[in-house]
Image (cartoon, rainbow, N blue to C red; front, side, top):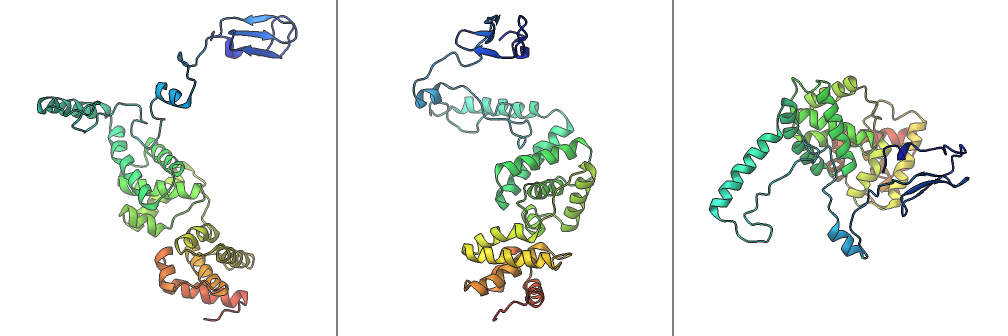
Length: 307
């Protein structure tokens, strides 16, 4: 494609904007007057042809997509630790020692600065935490983006990498409206809750993030799935939370506790009751919290619940 090809938006002859690009002939023409504006269009597609899906898959030569979850964004080469070559043959001990030395220096050359060393330690930790709490790839990418921004702004200095990574994962879950309880993040990351909360506030303030606060309704579907509750119970729990929100009962209350209590009440009303201990273990709150929220909801909403 010529240098001006992408910039052609108007015919130089008649001024028309009806431009046609013929990729077969390699020409750019005006549909009104027929002027050939450019005939040097370069085909940027592959030089090979494929007539079946199998041929296309076999002939394609592309690497893995770029990802923020790897320290080098997935651009560098990785030397396998396998003791066999590409044909499956056993590698000799002498060649294996040589590959070991090459791999060691290849890893060293990928890390040049303190930021690279930080990312080399932080990204595996991020993937570990995300795998334990079971979040999808989009949330992991957002968490990696938040951590990289925090690193660029100097927010990581003086803080433990594990706490900052855990805070990034927590905020990424909130941004995608798939929140996770702080206790769950704390347990998976194995960090101090006080330090984790401080890192969350530090990132919010330092990066000026506006991550939405989690509501009780956000936790209900996930808790209901883990408790194997039917859709009717989930719907009933959401109705209870919406009524409580309209009456102003939810203000200042822990959303996980409200979601747990709403599911407990909905289970009784729909005949799908679950034990308080089972709900408490799923929602990462205490049974006392569930009982307190339960009594408050039943009283304020005038629910006819038989315990």
